[in-house]
Image (cartoon, rainbow, N blue to C red):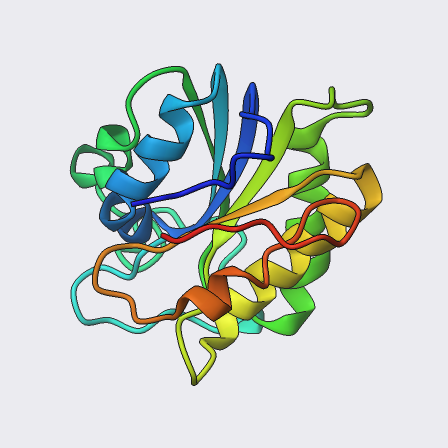
Length: 188
C-alpha cells in the first residue's frame, strides 16, 4: 500500500520507470494505486526480460538488428506489461538488451527527460523503484540515480514504489525526496 503524506499534493501526471516488463507486472498493485490517483501516467520500461533462463548480453555484444534473437526480442503476446496499470497509461520502452550498467544512466536520463517534457506542470511527479533493501541492486540504483537527476533538474517530486516480494524498509522509502529536498513520506 502506498501512503502519501497529507501535505503532498496529488499528482495529475506521473512519469514512472520500471526496470523490466516483468517488474512492471509485479509492481502492478503499487503502480496502479499511484496511477489511479493521477490523470495520466507515462511508464518507461528500461530493458527487456531475458527469455527463459538465458542471460542478457553485454552492451558490446548486443546486435544492432537482432532479427530473430530470442534473448533480445520476447514474444509480444506474452509481454505482461499490458496488464499494468490500468487507466490512462502510455507505455514506452527504452529496449536495452543487457543488464543495466552505470554507463546506461545517460540514456535513461535522456529518455526520462523526453517523457517529462520541456516545461512540465507543477502536478507532474516522477515514480521510481524503491531501494531493494540493505544490499542495493545495482540496476535499481542506476534507475534511481537517473530519476533523481531528472527530478532535480525539472524540480519534480519523486514517489517510490515497491513490487510485492521485494524487501525494503520505510527508512528506504523516506529517501525519496521532493524537488526541494524535503522527504516525502511513503511506503510501498
